Image 1 (tube, rainbow, N blue to C red):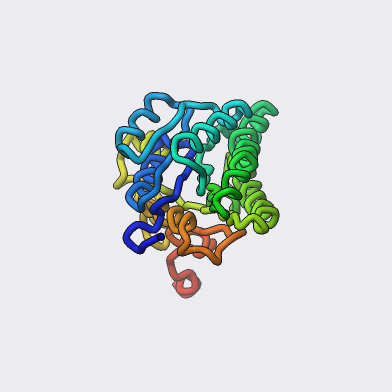
Image 2: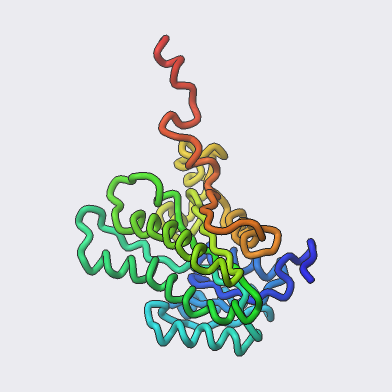
Length: 266
């Protein structure tokens, strides 16, 4: 029986994109809340680090999720290792984006990783979730799914597709008692932020401040707690929804967090 101390006790989760800063934070949150997890990433060294940080409650596989054979192995190995599947978190993502100059190959690769592979994984885990009496799928979208951003085409369009895919999944999986939701983070401390800022989180917070009511980037563990909630029975009435874990980014609007009208009187 689920308890408040361990909301995910007895749950088995598959997490893709587990070798990133964000992925490790999600994995650790799930473990802390009682889940057993199967971690997946194409980065073998990063996956090993994630497994080390998660301990005995985690196992995993280095795999390319654009391979249908690979997806079949991920699902079968998870079920064999932990006895079933209750949760799928589609976190793996391609950030490849050349904006208006994006090639057909870039478009196809982005949608293959970010959308099609998430759909194929959901399709593959569905029978296992049915055997358990239901389950929860969480798809990672982004604030980029809702706003136009200079120089970005393939990534935000794929994330918008992810939000719609979530709705369609939720509709078709509802008779199986499988809930499907998406989470759209705002600027969150991640491998990309770390790389672009040279590891300077204070600078990153300063750049992010005008776009977020919280005046900073999100911490990956903060977003991980939202994901974990959607995986748990505490969110049993929630399905087909996109959750903004964005520090108020999507609520703020173009006037940002400053009074604009007084500027007219200066």
